Length: 167
View 1 (cartoon, rainbow, N blue to C red):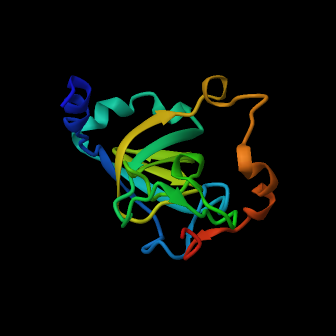
View 2 (view 1 turned 90 degrees about the horizontal axis):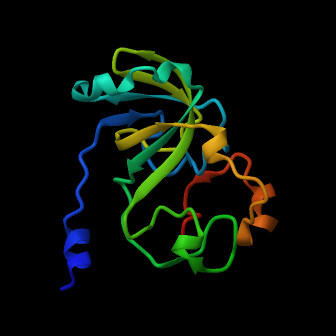
């Protein structure tokens, strides 16, 4: 076993909180945060990390990184909901990943203690939060991007929910 392989095996994360949403099951959960703009939820941060919330209230949006705790099977090829042909999982947003880590940009509505009220949620209730970062367009938005096979499919996204479309 290589040193790199041993290092990879040692990777562990401790959730810093839990995400609460109205979505109890994968069926009916928005596929992306832009699918159900305004869907409300909140994050409960472990009080041990409360000092890390300092100055966060000045940001309008957050990037949430979380564990996709309800993903059943990892697949290297998937047929995503916006297409009818298989793609490599890394060329999709499918949750059936080798490391089931989710990423969402949400609107920060308010903070009270260790509770963050958020909107535009697309995750299941009880999702473990691994990290959060402020969304900063100068760092996070890019111009002149290519979106691969999604280019001809993005007009089909409105109102999409996670049901049986992740095959």
